Length: 502
Image 1 (cartoon, rainbow, N blue to C red):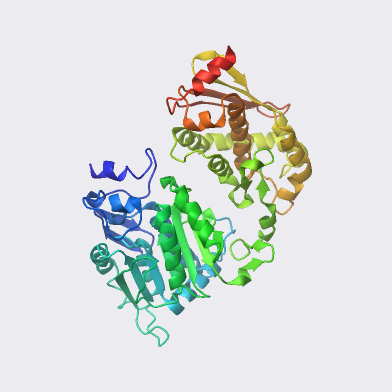
Image 2 (image 1 turned 120 degrees about the vertical axis):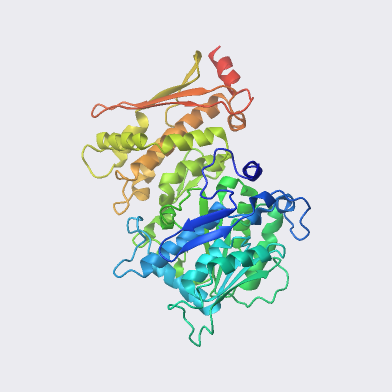
């Protein structure tokens, strides 16, 4: 019953990093084991919360347990701390040398060591703040509403008792004693918390737009010119109104960057969790906007390579080369497809298949002719050779052919391909599968929008759809992908295909 209640906030069928159990054990590596008490049975509030301005918080006690964004953010801290303490290792393990974890950690450690750490919306587990306390050995204040504090203090006492006795603890005059403290704090209200804080952390603590302004006010109240902030959201919870409002407010006061997915600790990764780095320090940014130099050495030029979708540009769809593997997610986000929708879950499962990855790499080999990267001619060949059809399951009379590439798509390849995929960041065998998934998905979605309509498509399909795609080249094995997309809503999408066939 408790798990069913928690699922009223989580999307159905979602794979999670934590479970609604009374005791949660997480091992992030040597010296970073946590045993956290949770109270999932308290998730449904019997009485409305008096202090929260959030409709979700008034009926759900979200702070009674850990959520995935907190696990991901704690893992990031452990990951970058670990690589900074290993001799001759400059990059986060598994990132392919892209992320300078040591430099990033030095920034966070200097901020936390100088001004202490504050976690906002720590919940009863306080996982992110506990991780920072173990790693930084400094003043840490874990904050939440008054009714949360006693349970939060219990988890502090159970997990951080060794800090004062640690041989590595820094008790120099600059840090007159390390401690971790649970503190009641209502966002935006006056507080006795020391400020400015050096490092502010927050994970999965915004669910409704009503709390965005108080949350940003709290960040402003507690921060100074040198404060670093890390804010994480699990977008699988589909609170896009709150996420978008936060980013709009945050960008008025800070430089905001999204941490690359590779910085997440292996075993504690989740694609839907986005972690934003807020800072006021100007040296990380050039005159044209955010610079990823501090995060991704050697990829400074990618800032100017963001791609506006040539066909769907009016919908505001922009792709980032740093997120090429997730670009299909950005495409569906911009069109308004819910992340929890059955069709989206189906696409996610389909695109995560290892055999599909191998097929796409085989397609790259056939297109490239043995070259290490595709040029615009090879990519045009790929785009023009896509064939396929869509029809309602067991009803061939509804069959419609995939649309050909648009004029805008072909013009973009001719005019912009070399700028988006320059010699220092080519469309190679590793990058191609992510691009190919986007191209194939766009073609199917554009076809269905043409014949069914986008609102009908987003509303769901009344009948399962068979999608059959092929790329047939003169050399190499032909690429073929067939799948059955599930029905998802009692809409007229299937009926519309029937009418088209008639």
